[in-house]
Image: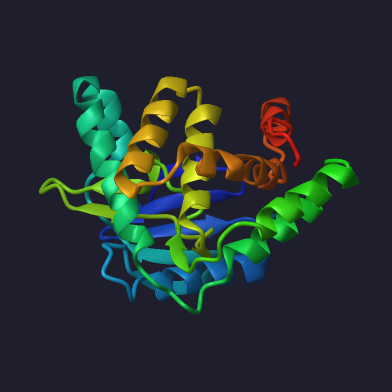
Length: 246
């Protein structure tokens, strides 16, 4: 097997026409099996998604096996062809909108996940309370939410067909919350101009007020803070405290 990616606690290998993701002991068995279950459930939609082929233990480590999709990530294409940024961004947003129209009723609910993340965050009790109230005030939807929708998680085949990968955070819920996370991820990666362009395009195409998505940002920032990624805490704290709590 050829090692093609190393992340925190996981490694991804290519084995011919298969992709194998191996997890170390920092990942729980329940979390790994839940990722496989999410993937299997989303496979039942009309979206292009690599099919999961197996769950196994390889050399003492839990592993997931998918079909390998030959292509380039949308992120790589955007970096390679900066003159096509607007074209690729429109492609990206259209795919996100198409995804949000799918229904996967057996997935967990985004609202429940966000409440748990807020409770697990290190912000003061008064801030956590306001975040919980804000979350409960959002309209209740059951749209398919990816949870990590960014150009690096889209594989584009040579014929232009997009495949969405990494469904470990998939839920059903409010699509604008998923868009808020995408916006925040662009900002965290230092792509401020692209983040603003993305948010404006998403809101125009979905006829959504930018202020509506912005109201979700403190909730998404608080949930992101639980990951405790180096260098993110101060940035996220500004977003969590950016709104007037009324």
